[in-house]
Image 1 (tube, rainbow, N blue to C red):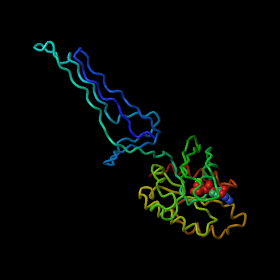
Image 2: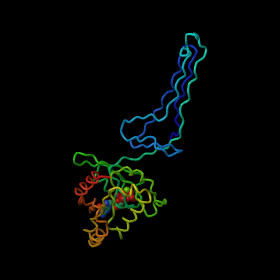
Image 3: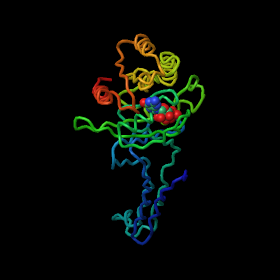
Image 4: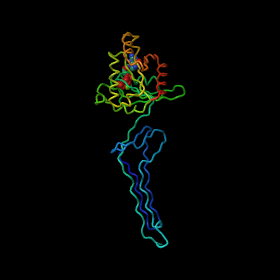
Length: 273
Ligand SMILES: Nc1nc2c(ncn2[C@@H]2O[C@H](COP(=O)(O)OP(=O)(O)OP(=O)(O)O)[C@@H](O)[C@H]2O)c(=O)[nH]1
Ligand SMILES: [Mg+2]
């Protein structure tokens, strides 16, 4: 990928009554959600959130004034002109922070990508193995005349904040969401423990993220109807979860409780931060 961009310096003015041309602008196109920080100080310089937003980050060099500019009553034929100025220089860090309304968080295999697929028109890769998703997927859910953007990110595991698995770097993609949906596979041995693991990794990444409004989605409920998972196990998990967190039991495969989940996701986007 191209890493260095140069705008032209301003040209020098000339002795033939001409100003120098200003340097040509360099326009770098980036997707909405791009955040630009100063690499040295970490200062946030630009937050490009909307389509078509255009910001000037560095000034190019101005053209020098030609000799005519320096003409005065006592100095009729100035023999000098001004040199062009160099443009500004800066080292920048450019990051993409996806703008989604709700982020899906879960252990690998919890069913995040499958849920994105059934709620939206997105077609993410799904696999019966951990870390199927290696880059975030977005999908749009349309409800009550609103488009709600859902983000499916790679799974988190215990120690992710210390780099285990794919680490926590994908969490920056859900840093600007209004809320999180924490997905727990009911068929796992201890979904409540999985919940605590996820919360711990979120907290280790950022308190701001950990304190976002959230809901819990108990996934793969068809594993209960198929006898693979004991209904008492599900009840027990629900009892252990903090009562203030809304909890919805679904099966993406059997299409169970999806309208209810849509409503709860919608409400999550309406909640105050
Ligand atoms: N029985 C059942 N299996 C499901 C359901 N949803 C997903 N699965 C299966 O669970 C496995 C993992 O699904 P994914 O959607 O890829 O899980 P993920 O959370 O995106 O996984 P990573 O991308 O690896 O983090 C796949 O084999 C899915 O078919 C469900 O509702 N019921
Ligand atoms: Mg996935």
